[in-house]
Length: 89
Image 1: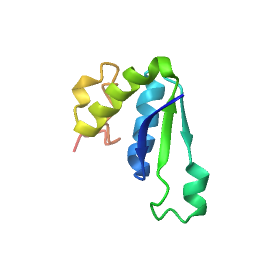
Image 2: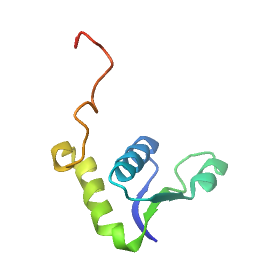
Image 3: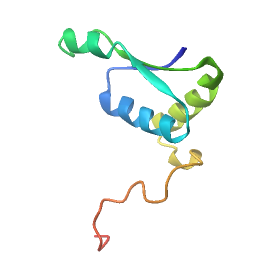
């Protein structure tokens, strides 16, 4: 396993997990419970890890997320930003 993301940002962590799973890259979060025990004050960042064979691909997807380069993610669903409003307002 290789660490591809180390963060205290749970929103980024959740998004990264979703994108990796959508890309068929299995991932595991380490230090999640340790961070909760210390009160989530940011002293222990959570680590997102993937198999060594998938690490480069995973890092590329995470870099695209952090850069806001959504178009760099080939498998991004067309309706991923659908807010559920049928009128599109």
